[in-house]
Image (cartoon, rainbow, N blue to C red):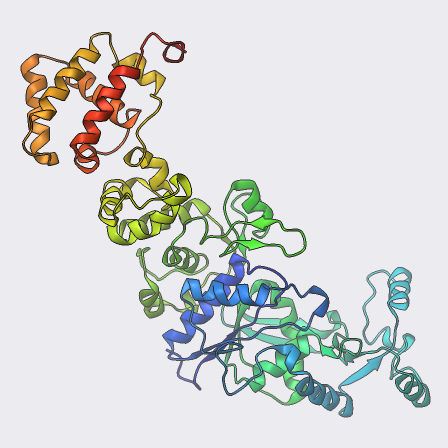
Amino acid sequence: MENKNKVRVRFAPSPTGPLHIGGVRTALYNYLFARQNGGEMILRIEDTDSQRFVPGAEEYINEALAWLGIKIDEGVREGGDFGPYKQSERRDIYRKYMRRLLDEGKAYIAFDTPGELEAARAATPNFQYDASTRMGMRNSLSLPPKEVKRLLDEGTNYVVRFLIEPGRDIEVNDRIRGKVTVNSIILDDKVLYKSADDLPTYHLANIVDDHLMKVTHVIRGEEWLPSAPLHVLLYEAFGWKAPEFVHLPLLLKPDGKGKLSKRDGDRLGFPVFPLEWTDPKTGAVSSGYRESGYLPEAVVNFLALLGWNPGDNEEIMDMDTLIAKFSLDHCSRSGARFDFEKGKWFNHKYLQNTTDQELASLFRPVLESNIGDSSSFSDKYLAGVAALLKGRINFVKDLWEQGRYFFVAPEEYDPKAVRKRWSPEMPAVMEELIAVLEGMESWKSADAEPVVLGWIEAKGYHLGNVMNAFRLSVVGECKGPHMFDITELIGKEETIRRLRRAIEKINPNSDEAKS
């Protein structure tokens, strides 16, 4: 438990598209850390890049976090004492702090056009806008004050750049990586503000917001580590204490090198977004964990263990357990390979712990998408199907793939099973079986099984051949749970109807059976 000021963390995505699963993990770690320490979590929308804004992305982010059970304490929807929580609505705040840096000589105005910058890059290999080049560019340090005033009065577009002095060693203290020292000579004079859209860049807005919103820990992805030295200098320039930095390891491809991308999901057949996403420009649809049949608890458990371990061998942990066990000190420094098969395993485990009634409720929409009206099947019947099949499934939709015969009688029969199990004398044997079944008083699985097995033994029939022919008649192939559990659920009348249909339809001499 952190013993400093009240822990406050923030998750600050940009609304430039769907929330990547790596971003979800970052949000989750922020949430676990805040809750573990009795702290608060902020959702801040960083929409300062107006060129990349995508309609619907902000709503998607909120819906995804809600589905996963990541509860936000302060944000655009929740409100709070430190709003607005959308950066495009904080222009006045950023102008104030941008002006402060200019007045104190810690930043300067630059008028270089995109063409001029491109020419400088072409003329100088590895060009960097810094102490070695800034005086040769068009800015308020190199131009006479009258020229600067004239350009401003004429409304010339400009940017504000942070003034970085070379030769300084900058220390970044990171919770996971320890002390990282960087010399300022490798940093350029980053743009902090653009007059064209009257918005700050990420660097200024991020620092100002984290300070004003009293953020104590900045937990973000490793890809932001290169910006940390600049942020340390900005905190210093304002005279503010920097929050504790925590840079999480990357999520890596399931195979090969590099970080996880949407292409990996498309190539290997797994989602990289929490919810399905439809691109508003192209109409292209990307799959989501929710629509693919994952339970949110399983996704959370799976993601939590990608880059963190609880220090023991426990794997199945609900949100409360994760909160109790989470520690940044057990986060890995190296990247975590994204094992999507392990994600399926987690979903399988969570489905086993889901009640049959809950599974029935989740399954009904799947059933209706396959057969239309499902009102003829009761919730109790669906729960019975779930009870028999839940050990065999990774996703709710698998209940249909594994058990469609519970809802639709077979129209065709597995040719291989027909060749192997349906001998010329089998129709007569199945007629005998029908007579045995019709004479039963109890249709319970435990009562029916000894009667049928006793009949097979008494007649001297081959147990495997008769039972597999029975299964083939009812299911359409030789698969499924215990045979008498199936017949108990579908009922006596339907079982006998299917046997009669099989006797009529199965022909072991057909071309299909021979193939």
